[in-house]
Image (cartoon, rainbow, N blue to C red; front, side):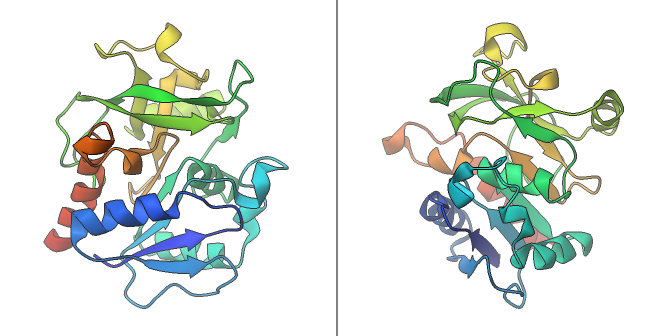
Length: 232
């Protein structure tokens, strides 16, 4: 799998996601600076990593969404190429229009950094085939603006099309209430594009790929991507 990880001023999770991609696919991804106009030839997957692009100022992700490389990312997505945005990367995807909705300040107005349970909504996508239907996983969250908001029509389309990828839940898989850390509507932690080739999520699966660092619940996402490319 040929992956390209996009670096913006302030990105700081690129090493984590590069390590996860290499562990899953056996191939180190390319690193692409935000000022570039083109993706490497043969790119299968583009990853927008977490971090604090442009200091997370002025609506997180809004400035990064205007970077020259984002035109190439949008063209890649339009061709059916895979795109994954994690945390700040998710914010950039909604700000650039590749995914609907917006990410607001957390409901309690505090930065959250802790472990969080998620429910896998479907396993027939390029990103989730190595999970079990309805599986509850535990991964890390670290964000100040992860409160997913969209108008009622958009939420209805997301739900009707099965485009909610992950929902916040407790250890038993129960949704709502205290299990939702940031107030996201419909407990949404991640969503797909219309063609299911773009995924944005707030949690950090790249940080849970080895037992020695606390768990492996994030690894199946990267194994799913690697297997999808082999089968293509």
